[in-house]
Amino acid sequence: MPYVPVAELKDYVGKELGRSEWLTIDQDRINLFAEATGDYQFIHVDPVKAAQTPFGSTIAHGFLSLSLIPKLMEDILVLPQGLKMVVNYGLDSVRFIQPVKVDSRVRLKVELSEVTEKKPGQWLLKATATLEIEGQEKPAYIAEPLSLAFV
Image (cartoon, rainbow, N blue to C red; front, side):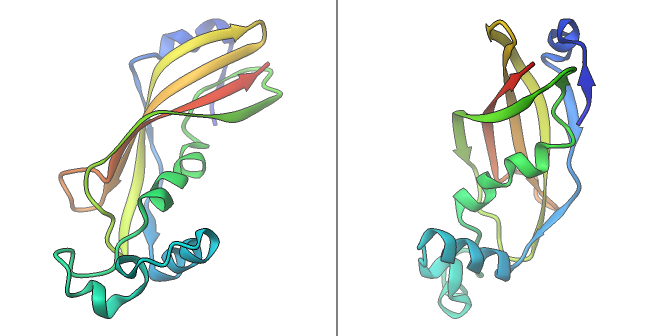
């Protein structure tokens, strides 16, 4: 993850910071997420039944796709030099646009939207995160994750 002087953080607002590497969403990952959350809806875990739906296959849980933001964003989000820690501060908005079908490859495009000093030494970074699906025009979602950086 790139580090810049605090005074330069605002220079990145409105700019695309980059894209993550591609990640394959396979059935094992979907099943593990189902196990972790208790969400065993057939559209996620039953390939036979899911094949009969308009999607034609199982799909990743929306929250599985969303939970990838911290990992996919870690090498992209610009952070202040002298960082002691950064924590997830939530999301301002999320729109799921289309499902991620099993065995799809996804990557995250990140733009820095806002930088706000909450308190001395605490910087709130708002990003726009778009989960792209390889070969698809529409993304899986557009979200606005918030990260609180402590300097």
